[in-house]
Structure formats: structure tokens, C-alpha cells
Length: 386
Image 1 (spheres, rainbow, N blue to C red):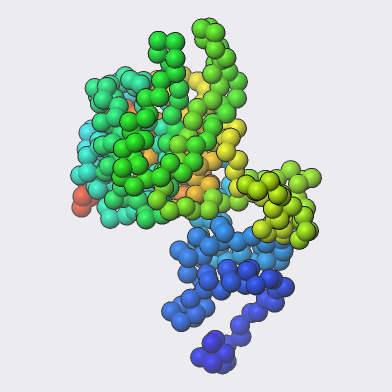
Image 2 (cartoon, rainbow, N blue to C red):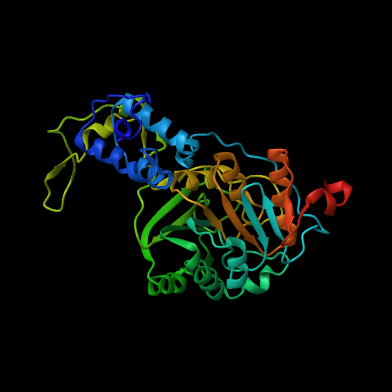
């Protein structure tokens, strides 16, 4: 096509030895009619996550395609660092209703159960991933949050009811919750909410474990010291998680066509569907996520680490939505990974915490979106907190 339309142009050509499946994936990322064979970034970002190849040359070419197209996929191999979380201020700069712009991120001090607040935050956008750690079992007691959390089912149904129209059709929902014990038993407080989610068309797609490292000190009335929480995964359509977790060196080896793997229902072992993929240096994440919890006193009752948030962001594509932003950890993780995150937080003090974390991390200034005017943080905040 290039030769016919621009015969005098010199076009670089890379010849690769790939199989038919690999060729199909590459061709599917290109739009020669509309873009003269230049990459379609949206299709490329989605399809690159599905490519399985043992060819070093092909993997290198795909990396270059992703970088040239500006795909988030190419940026997600960065390491993240845990930053210092400041104490929430007693007299916050943020007021209810303030919308803050933190570079590419948006943070609204509002109520994620209210459709008007969620709509204002997104301003016509849609998220590919909703990742959050809601308060549970009257766990949160700061500011206005306690009254809202007292009706946990109402809170959760409200939040996910307003979120449904802000997610892509193949959007993924991941919700971090911990155990609660009452009257000598663990309490399945999530049952009513999960039943409601299913009524709305969300599938109970996955149930994972967050291994938080060491057990919490104390007397746990005969139980083991808690060192884990759960991660509930809902969707309407599956999206293949990214292969970003490094394999052990001894496991990086292509399989033969005749080799077998797990047993099927009939008791017979099944052949590998893609033997060459075993030679790749990375894999999809395990269902047990082994990342230590956040340490230190932030005043927030249940902070999770930047690493935990980054783990979720690296696993699924798209704009991220955090309806319980808290101290802003998901936004901090997104910033370090080159991803975008939109957050809602009801507490003005914790909106301030997120803004201060982001400004310290980036060296940039946050702006309050006042409609036709954007006001920098430094013009609003007292000198002591600038």
C-alpha cells in the first residue's frame, strides 16, 4: 500500500520468522486504510497484552510499536517506590465539591454514591479498571464517613450503581476487603452486596488472596495472626491480564508440542495450548498477591501500599477509577506507572493528603478546576502547606 501511494518514499522493513497466530496479532493492530499502516493505539494496547511469543526479535518489535503509539503497555514495567504519607490536616485547604487536577489525574472531593459527583469527575470519560478498598464493618470513622458506612450494603450498592455507566463494556472491578469476626465467627458481611452485584449483571469472576507478609501482633482469641485479605473480581466480559510478572530463570524454557500439563475432567493430561509461551520471561500474576501492607501511622484506618495498587494497575489496562481514594495511594501508583487515575474522596483532609503526596512525588503543582479557570494550589493553601 505504501509503495503504491508513495512510490518515492523509503520505507523500513523488518522481516521476522513468526507463526500464523503471531502474524494475525500483529496485523490486527494495524489500520492501513485509515492510518497508512500506522499503529492504532487503542487496538494495539489491547492486543499487545494478548501476544504470546518466544521470539526475541518479535518481542523487541512489539515494544517499539507500543512506545511509538504511546501505549500504556510500554510504560508498565517501571519500578514503584513507597512514598511518605503526611498526616491529614486539621484545617484542610480542600472544600467539599472541589475538583483537583493532578497532571493527568482527577480528584474530586465528593460522594461516590452520587451520580452527579461521579459524572463530574469523569466528564465523559470511561474507566477500564475500578480498583478500590472500601471501608467495611464500620471500619472508617473519620469526618462524615462514619454515618455513611453504617449502612454498608447501601454504601456499596450506591457506589457501584453510579460506577456502572462510567466503565467500559469490558471494564474490570477489583475490590479489596478484609475479614470481620463477630460472636466467635467470621462474618460474611459481603453476601448481600455480592448478590446485588450479580443482579446488576456483574459476574463473580475471581476471588484472590492478598498475602500481606507478617501477621499482625496481638492476641487473636485462638486464631492465627491475620496476614491476608481478599480481592473480589467482577466483570461482564473477561480481559486477559498482562504478562508482566518475572518468571524464575529455571522456568523460562519452551515446551515441546507433545508435553502435557494439568489433568482434565476425564483424568487425562492436556497438551499445552501454546508451548512456545513457556519460553517467555514473564507471566500473568498469581491468584495470591504477595506484597507487604502499608506500615506507619497515616491516620487512615486501612491504607494499602503503593506496590499493591501498582500490582492491580499493571495487570489490567485503561483509565483507573478509585471511588474510595483515601490518602491517594492508587493515584500515586498510577503516576509512577504512567497511568491515569480518577479518584473520589469524601474527606477534604484526605484529598489534601493525596495532593501533597502527588506534588512531593512529581515536583509539580495541583490545580483546582473552577470551571473556566484553574487555580494553583499555591494560591489557595497557606504558606505552611505549600
